[in-house]
Length: 385
Image (cartoon, rainbow, N blue to C red; front, side, top):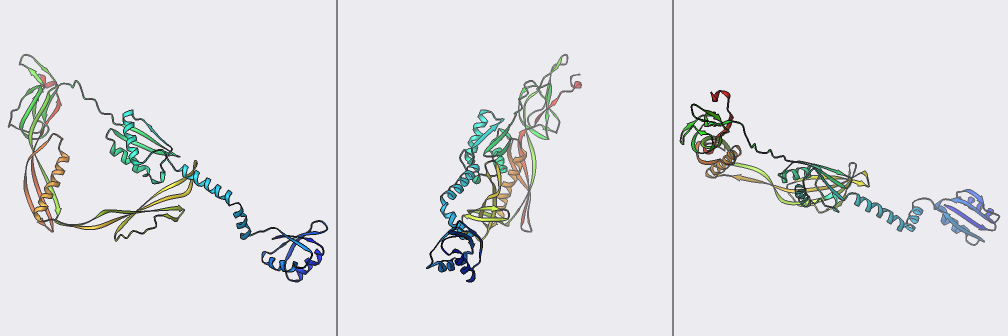
């Protein structure tokens, strides 16, 4: 603590302090009637006591240490508050969405993309902390836009950049070359619609894979010329599907109840800032998403962490034999439809094998399907001779 004493008998007074055991240093004369010196903060009370009754004036110039620093801070509290408020505002603005740019999309596709972005909350003025991560945004856009092959997502500062690759649908072949229509698999012909070419099979005829159905060579014995055979030949085909289904099983499901907590992370340390209520879930799963905090163009070593606690529970699923049979047939049909073209129709089904072993139902199901079995085959030179 720096002290200034003014008056008469200053030297005598300083000697008095020294004799009393007070540490005094950096003594400097300030003219003929004043002296400055340094004194410990703990000795100020004794200094005040010693100066009483003497013709001296004491003035404290400056102090060092936490109490004086805190006092000076309080005097400049308005400036300090404004400074930190300025930093907070800049940080918040640096972590908001201020631009969305889309490249490579037609106006129609761009309009659809912006509609999807609105649903995801990616709009000007929204905080980046509450948005999905880049990979999740990319996956959702790709899944929800059927006319888009790929969407590249990049976050540069406060602007999201989207690069779009649209699907190039192949143009239908307007003038195919000379071709036959042959069977794609063994079948019994159910019906046919021939636009061009010469049918060489009849209704209810059994055909093998690769057998000629509609000839692309027309004319007579004297004059033959090739055409592109065109049409559809519907045949009855057969499929087998095996399926297994446990009669009793235990699985975990989410109940839909969830709670969120928010943290500020610095290194390995996390400071809890919001969401202090602890959910009373017996079973739960915790997932964490972290967003880096930016200040202008710089990325700070600070993370905004969103922790989601989802309640889950275990459930038992038990089937009677009849219920298991119905569910197994449903699963088998779903598996079958993945293999069939859209126009195919399942006309009948037969259970070939069925038994329960070790608590599991095993079934082998046989299906009759009507589908277009005609596929194109180019006409070889020998077919015209």
